[in-house]
Length: 183
Image (cartoon, rainbow, N blue to C red; front, side, top):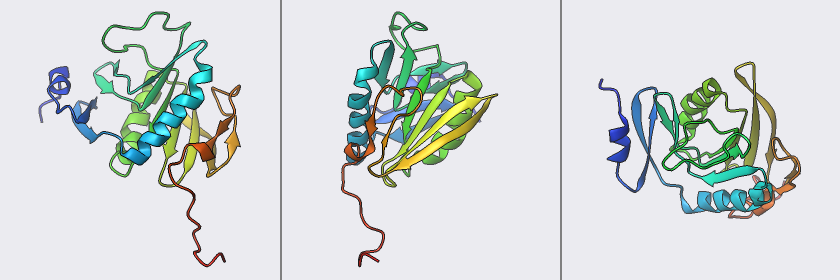
């Protein structure tokens, strides 16, 4: 099998997110509208952290031969004082992946492994369908789950402990009770 190149990324259809993971080109759909609500809500909530951070939607990041596009990436301005012209070659300090059925498998398996190898310190996995936030920290090259929160929890989580994040404001739809009769 021919290894994917950056030319393959540049030639990908505009309506797809193109990434190279382990030498293979992956094309995934853009975020669904419901997931866009979560994405925008996170960007808005984290806006207060922008002092000292670059928090960016869909940044292209080159990590060796891998080209990844986290849903949201965050770099401390002390580490990246000037934004690059085309793409980042420095791994983010923090990132967030909004998990969808079409992307969850490679976000969790391949991309988290690549992020760990690059030394990304913090990762958030948000699953809109389950209304959950999973917070991970890299320790000794492996991801440690710091916690999983759901529904309308109000949390302060790494690396943005100074910000109170109201998860209930992220979801596009009200919660659905698992037992329709209220039992």
